[in-house]
Image (cartoon, rainbow, N blue to C red; front, side):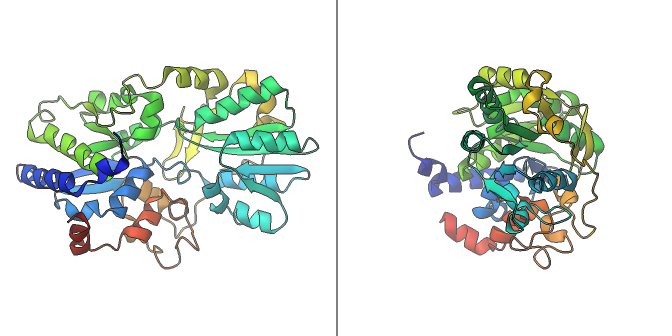
Length: 380
């Protein structure tokens, strides 16, 4: 790859789309494909791919948006931290607007709390060094993609001897929610578009259980339109060729320019050093999943906000009107939620899926009104 435009080439897109249309005529039934990552959802609806592909390809949306899967109780814990004297809470920008029971972190800042958004956890460490009389807590979220940067920051804090910095870890792992979806039967998924960013760390090997245990094919994909179209073609081919029918589904690596089978061993080793698996962790829409969250290892306990502070840790039910959980498990489409686009918008979000730029509801709201004729015109 030299330029990103190579993966948005209209001529190549037309050829892939035509091939997919021709191949779907051979299907016995439509395929329900779950794109795990919210970044893929954003690309699909920004470029109108769902309108360009045949009706036999049905995209549903998975739990791969780290902001979207955070339960309200964990947000309330962050709000409690922000209300403590001499505490500075830092986090990524999209977490600032996620609603808890008493508002968001942005609301807390408006009430006078010292809450700051950062681009990197290392920025939080710098804030701690600049404010030695304050306790600085980094509200950490994300899958295996962002967890290494938190781990690097913790190692750096130890090396520099910073004593007023801690991490409120809400990092999660990708395998348990996919197992829950494949085992739970909430939605009948035929294939998965694997999350390219997560796979850069964990490798394609992390998704082998889906074909091995469930005979479900996976295509780990990049995030440009042609990446996703090629991934769909790969998944479709496994059905057309009879491989799935024969029990020979497999993981394919469309994102080979970045992703390796073993992922990034150095990053994985770092995660194993700094973090350990929680016994259980709560997910929005999926409930409590075993060994799905990352906490700080005992050797880093001095930087663990959950040990430095006595958090409320209350279980909070999602608002009754919000159906983010059903969206995240592919059970419904965002527009099927009763409050989508009315009471719940990006300006007035009720649920997390409307807050994050990667959220399925936000993608539908911002780009889902593209008509099929307009999508075809864009490709032409």
